[in-house]
Structure formats: structure tokens, C-alpha cells
Length: 98
Image (cartoon, rainbow, N blue to C red; front, side):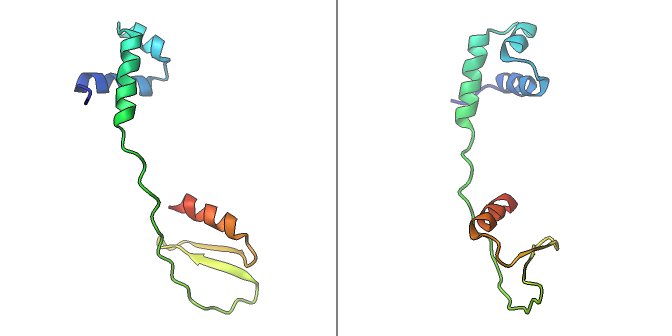
């Protein structure tokens, strides 16, 4: 069930207001329980986050005298890490960069 535009606008205005739900409802003469139901409907309609996607990686052999791992990102940034960096930590880093 989709919310009418006016109800969605109230939810967006409340989120931007930094007021509690009760304070916002009091200020706009809304029933707080009804507003809570609107919010529940709105949140249930939100699309679930997309499944993680694979990041293309190109591995090029390179001689590094300093024992570092060099990551060149598509935006042109370069990140140098110790060659013995934890694979788990590196996986978490890739999740953050996604």
C-alpha cells in the first residue's frame, strides 16, 4: 500500500526537522499513532539494499622493493599498503570502497 504524497511529505519534513515524532505531530496537529503507522508503511516500502557486487580487479606483476601492495583505483587514486596486510582487513576495505 503506497502512502499518499501528503503523508510522505510529512515524513520527510519530520526527518529534516530533528523533532521527535510526538513533537512534530503536536506541532502539525497530527495523531502520533497514525503518523507512526505512516512511518511503518513508508519504511516497509523502501527497497532493500542491493546485493554486493563484484569489483573488477586487474592484477599486474610489479617489482616492489619496499614490500608494499599498491592499489590503483578507477578514479585515479593510489593506495599503498604493507605487502603483509591482513586479507580480512583488505576485504573490509573493499566493502567500504564499494
